Amino acid sequence: MATNRIFSVFSGRTQPGQVLRKILIFTSWLPAVIFFNGNVGQIATINGESMYPYLNTSYNESLSRDKCWVNKLNPAGNLNRGMLVTFRSPSNPEFMAVKRVIAIEGDRVFPRAPYPAPVVDIPAGHVWVEGDNRDGKKTLDSNHYGPISASLIQGKVTHVIWPWKSFGAVRWWEFKARTRVIQGRRENAFHFG
Image (tube, rainbow, N blue to C red):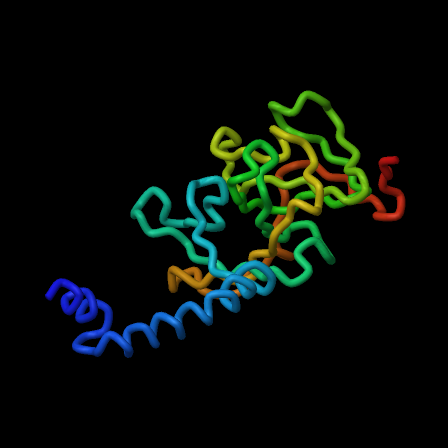
């Protein structure tokens, strides 16, 4: 009697063989879904207020959070100032962060507090990332942990999918940074080793 209830929960009034077949079909697709999410793209929920007001525009008004498309094809390739990227946080590698690329290798940055140095030259293979929130206390970014290795970058945020009022492509090239950056040349970036 109890097994009949379990089967009816899964698929209405199907026979045990049909339920097993549905489970096998579902599990056969799991590797493809995992591969797609890890290497092609995924939908990410933007939590917190570090990217406010550009993302999570209604952060203070509702519990709704922005849903964005993250492109994971060649995540660290062709990085430009203004792009939104997802990466493993240097301070907590289990946490995925979303920040804006402010400076790329070869650039010189004049960081804000609490960064201890007045000037930072971005080395080869690194970028300077910051949150969009005007209150620097709301975001852990390069002003706290310095330039991040491009190898930590997992993807680029390319589109806002939800809410509808924000739906569309992320127009990163229109962004004007608050941090002062002197643009350099990639080939002039300092190389370690």
